Image (cartoon, rainbow, N blue to C red; front, side, top):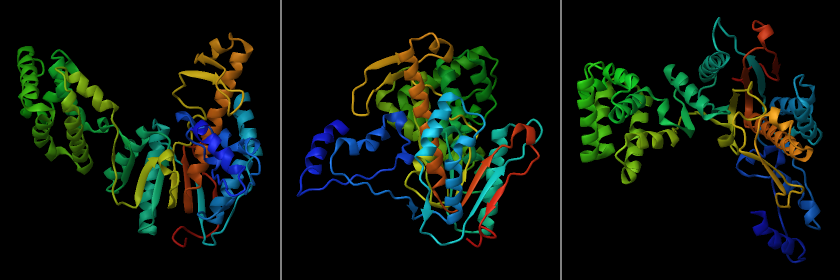
Length: 425
């Protein structure tokens, strides 16, 4: 993209009758995973003559307590006790370049770090989800109508949290998109389709036979091989004659009475996917199942409570921001397919290596090992940018929810308060 703009930018920057205006924020560079290179922006002054830099570190969104905590976190990130060499290098670079922020806003605010207490044998992420649900319910009672943004790192957790909120009758807008396979009703239909392709699949036979869909497909005994084969043949015939959309719509009527509003929404979205798939339908239901598993569907609404991954929140603001998934690694779970070396932000790649684990990295030449270190540092920097974006979405109040340290499950998390309560804010 820059190569396409560079000559025009140079011409305009050097033209007395013209002017070049560039705006961006390296602290919000969260799209490296899809090719974004914030270092290009940082090096513009070296490439284009006559540029004047104006640093904008005054917030027009957040209250003073939120900005105070943002400063405290990112100016002291090197105090983290558990950073390896590459992480320390990336954190040190980010911290050194982080300017103190101020704010134009004079309204009161509130910030709290909450340690979610875990019950015996309870998984930490489940405890965090329950604590967020309790917090949102309390906020809605104290400050009706305030906008609440719940920001997470993965789409899987978005779906889990939406389910937890709605199970407590809290309406929430699900944004960013998650697979419809997070619905039990959808899974029942996919099991029926699996049975059509593989009549011998015992789990699918059992789940369909013990579900409300059993009547719709005519399956009563999952252990009767002859009966299952007849049902599988009937499903395949129906799909050929009527198509996926009409077949799935008919099956919905058997499941609807057992579904809440979200499950019904997911079933309707499955029918929409069936419409999309029909022109490329094959004789194998497995092809449709794979298609469904790859698609992401969102469920937006006008609810003041919105749940999304941090990437979707960029550019937005909320009266209250609630952050979860704060215990995840600084580096992504899904490792890149390859690493590369780029000596200059504007230069072409001059080296590349398939990604290998740490043991094999130690066997590689020094210059190739350096590629892996550079990649790790970029990943850490992007994780810090992601946290910065998440924290600065809050206008009046910021809540950060995490499981307590293993050695201090019963300890209470600290608060930072600038006014008596969020209701006053």
